[in-house]
Amino acid sequence: MSTRSPARSGLTGLYLSLLAYGALFGLLQLKILPALGWSEGVVLLVCSLAASAVPLVWSRFVPAPQGPRPLFLPGAGQLVFLLSVSLTGNLVLMLLTPWMEKLWKPFGLTALPTPGDERLTPLVALYICVVGPVLEELVFRGVLLRRLSPAGARVAVVLSALCFGLMHHDLYQGLSAFWCGLVFGYAYLQYGLLFSVGVHMAGNSIAVLLQWLQDRGTAASLVILLLAAAPVLITLVGVLRRLRRPRTASSLPGPQPGFRWAAPALWALLAFDTIYLILASFRRV
Image 1 (tube, one colour):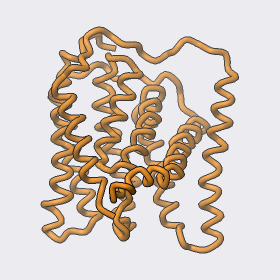
Image 2 (tube, rainbow, N blue to C red):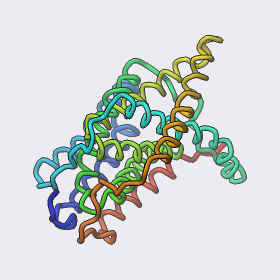
Image 3 (tube, rainbow, N blue to C red):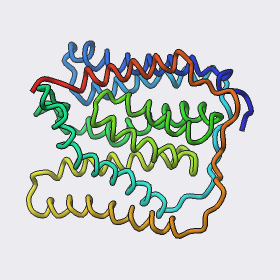
Image 4 (cartoon, rainbow, N blue to C red):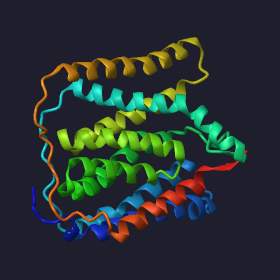
């Protein structure tokens, strides 16, 4: 891994490109493309491609530290376990959502989506299951996490997951994305970009399947119950097995000197996405 300081590796430009990513996505999604009468699926695909191009093109012209090499060869068991961890976190968040809604109720606010906003068309499913995961992993793991890696694995994973969560500009989606970003970041450092893309695509595809199965009869309800219960059981078994293993020294890269938390562009990015998330999430009941 390169020993160059992250502060000297163009991180300011990266943070600004991610700020442009969020602003462009929102501008296209809320203002420009709906005025053209385009469908939701087309809007999401165009927004994702156009916004992702900013940090991806930027990264082609700025030297980057050497990307982390996969530490282990992944197996199907690892894919199932990490997928189960991400799904279990989403299930916990779903169970906590009614309790969180009670916090906003005294102020006459809700962060739940407007009824009728969640239309699942083939193009929307294509975006959620394929295009979104690929582009988001390229941007937030392949570019952001990779360039943060000299700051240490923990900082890189947490900060990239935080940016990933805030970028969704939706409170509950953002919390889910932050949790999943931690899982995807770990998968990226351990097994590489293709593996993190695979976990991301699988998780989103199961979420789409669960949405499609709603209100489709008893058999569909049983499938939903299985898809909800199985990840929890797999996660518990996997965690218990890992706790029983002898402790070994961490194989993930540690921090190198030079990372600057005080970078103004980083705080501008976090502030922009946080304010955007709050304004976009809450509405009057």
